[in-house]
Length: 383
Image (tube, rainbow, N blue to C red):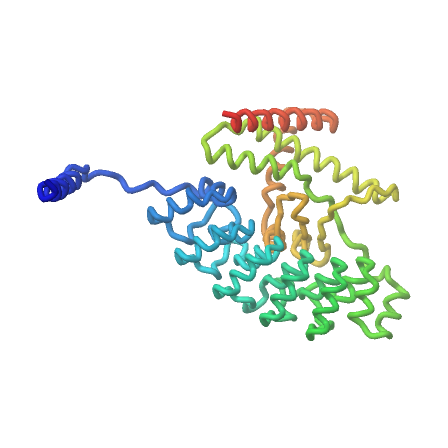
């Protein structure tokens, strides 16, 4: 009986191959949006299926970059291992010229940084480019910064505007990091393209302990006599979490082919309200009425108009602002950011309608729209 079954099974297998339509189309790859949403959500099953079907391991999503970059950004080690095993380029750059190591360092994912270094990620980069040490120091991730330094990170590497990691520590008030950089041999003398050095950054932002570290006694004494000479730090309020939440919901809906009209209205309302609140905050600060925002964005305002954000526009990750890394902020100097573009379109729409909505009206519309899409999301989840 077994002898008869074996030839029969073989014949059936041959027939199945012969009967399969020759016109059967190959698997359709995901769109950049679908791919980005799946990787960001940590959908290992979907990613593995696409890779098994022949999707390149360095396939780029609609934002952040390749799958490995997104996994590094989120600290998703399982996905990182999957991409690396499939041959992903550990030193690939995204459209902002960032690498996976930088993104993991910016977000403070220690294990992701270690994994990338073990798999050959370059701790240094040639020329004037943002690197992982800049990102780690800027974001205040001391453990990662020290790890990178122990692996040979260039202490005096320059960003595109010639700033150094020590300048960032001085700006952000990272005293322990500033001390570690100096003890390791970081140079305190370099100046960036605006003529600022670490002392200028420290004095401008009232980080006087660091100012002492990066200067001689004579230099600090002169600086202390005229702190106003270094000018005020230019600051603005970062975008609230609601904006990032709405944008993420819109991306998910688009990837699933669902309507986004209500979400888009909510986004416009949130942006307009944020702009209004920012203007009010600025006026209050100028009038000395306090109201200091909890999360700030740094800008520079020297020399060329239109490059105000090219210095060190820092967004605290917890705030969920649209601009998420220094390199993205610097790229914004070459053209309007996504947020700026939406605001401009919103202004045009309001102008066509012939009236300007009040802050109270915008706030009410925002809350109503946000409530609607949250209810919709909950309803979808309960199905």
